[in-house]
Image 1 (cartoon, helix red, strand yellow):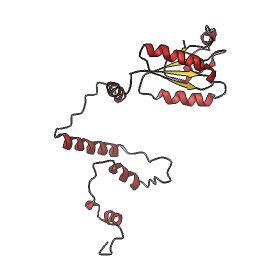
Image 2 (cartoon, rainbow, N blue to C red):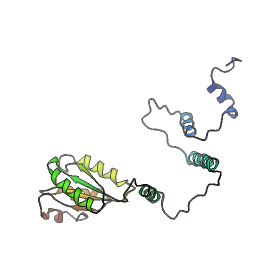
Image 3 (cartoon, rainbow, N blue to C red):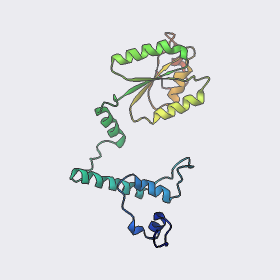
Image 4 (cartoon, rainbow, N blue to C red):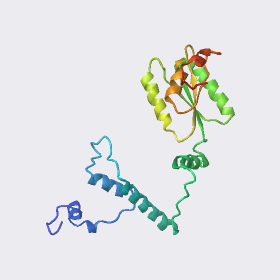
Length: 202
């Protein structure tokens, strides 16, 4: 700096914060994180923002919206939860179908049956995703994947594609918040009907 009093703009703003431009972008959040000592180059997670910071950030974005549109921002009535509204908006935009079938299989050898299930679901316009995860060989991975889908904003149905003892459908029904249907590749299989109490698969 010319006067030599401050070595950088950062030092100047620390001494005279009133000179700082009020940001109406994501820079506001960046500044808050940096003030909290957040170091993006080495930190594994960001500090949690306070409710005041979140409200202030929302307020600034509201102001941006009003400046761009020239209209007062009208908050939507809370007729539906934010999660439901997100699903409705993404569905209206064609990015979601409003539901999803998650086909879980225990082995790659079940691929033909998986494709058959996908084909039948497609007839009804139901999108599907397939995951290979053995209950016996990868129990912890299965639990983590189910926990991930438990957070889905989009309603899901789990289709368990496993033969033999069919531990997959029973395990999935214990760990998932979504309904579980057993469709074993080896035809009629009563094992899914003999799971212990609290198992809700069909």
